Image (cartoon, rainbow, N blue to C red; front, side):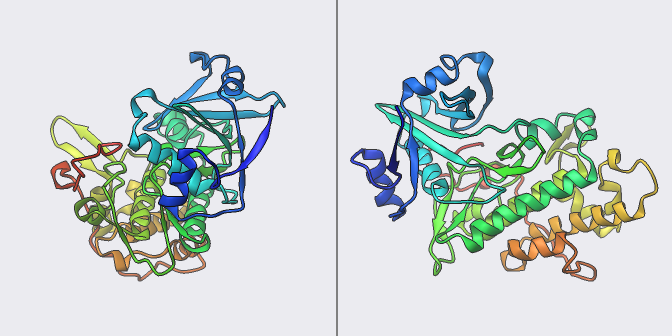
Length: 355
């Protein structure tokens, strides 16, 4: 049986918390699924149907009774706590009334006893981390055109969240594994469990630090002051990752850890950024491709500058990536950098995800 409910109006404790915590009173509706319905859809949450796992829990591929193929994210038993509940609520609050081609589409949820599930469009090509960062063979399938499209798509999603959506939304966990890819490799930003809503007159909020080391902006990690520029920093790291084909942190026995942001800064200062471009892209003497790739990496470096006021907003980033605004001659200052986990301001009363 199918029925619908207003996502911020319900007698359940979960939806009461949505109203209290998020200040929302939206007219949008989400489909409310029964647990039995979702259990049937993915054959008893069979391991054969499992397509991923993250901080929230496991994700399964399922087929609904109407034939629709969906991804079902299930809150893990270990997260049946206030933290898990907060992430579940944040995801619904962020996604219940957004419409953008580069954001994952939330169909509905299951709130039944202690069970919590979210139902999305199924993404045939899994995540950017899965399809792109699995070695040279994986990266070979990502042409320069595909990398540009993915980079621009993520930038457009963030510009929508930061500048067009009211209240504004800060994602807090932009990274390769949270960028999903559809059948045509179009990017969809996903996993809003850590998202925070900002009113127009709010410059920052103070919150427990959560996210993923390497993508975390240093000022947020150290002080707990979250702004939209925190997402801009994470996007800059992701952009460097996409263009270079390198992991954000690499390790070898002789030199220890190498951080991608630090490496890009060194190469920029030596005027050798082109050497950081993924070698699988440079199979010939395509100077235009090299020039575009270097421009994208300069945009990445602009996004990770230490001074938050110097980082561009996401709508400006889109213009730079599209070459509507030139980056040539722009001064790029030292990037913010966080290599020491001990510097992270962690709320001792709550565990911090992805560390």
